[in-house]
Image (cartoon, rainbow, N blue to C red; front, top):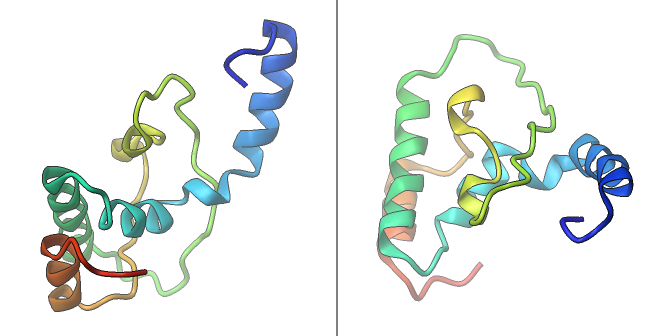
Length: 107
């Protein structure tokens, strides 16, 4: 949508943002665990562990599409992490550490 005229871009961007379930925190974190860059995989691992430590007592999680950062140059910055409540994916800490370290894992 970046190459559209401004009037069309605002329409398209609002639709993308409204349907941004692809950019949900859990989905991004799992995807980032399989990034080619070691430091990015480690960042995902740290975010998940931090989210587990700060996990709320609320049993029901709300699956709400995040606000999209359309000026992001990298998919890891497509959402504003500090503005979102990160909920950890349902993967054990041990499996997460293996995923973050092992580049040969298949999805």
